[in-house]
Every structure is written in structure tokens, then in C-alpha cells.
Image (cartoon, rainbow, N blue to C red):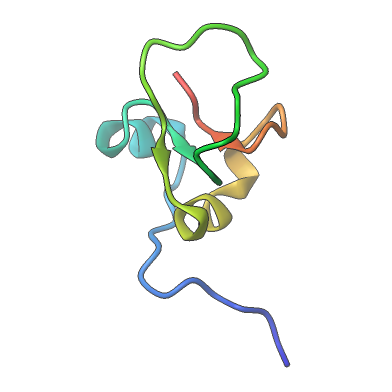
Amino acid sequence: MGEIHAAGAKKYKNCTELNKVYKGGVAKSSSIKNKGGKTKYKPHVSASLYEANKSKDRDKDGIACEK
């Protein structure tokens, strides 16, 4: 079997684009805590959306583009 692609999960060009839609970024699961300190917004929780934008999770804490 090949790679599993999340159906309908949008891959954003960069965090600026992603944050326009999801102010707090995208988290893999609701139990994940941000490692990078305080954030202003709560991240949107979506495993498929996170997978599509995983490359934008610079600190590898399970939240992409947290703000």
C-alpha cells in the first residue's frame, strides 16, 4: 500500500496562509501541549490537516503554525 493521503485536507503554502484560516495553527490531537511557550490562540485540532501541513511544525511539537 502506498502513502495515505488525507482526503480534503488542505495543504497551505506557508504559515501566513494557514493562520488566515486557523489563527492558532493546527494540532495533531487535542492532548498536545505547545512546547514553544505561550500562544495567543488555541490551535484547531485535525490530524489530517496537521499531516498535510506537518512540514510547517518547526519545533516538532505536534502543532503546526501555532501563534
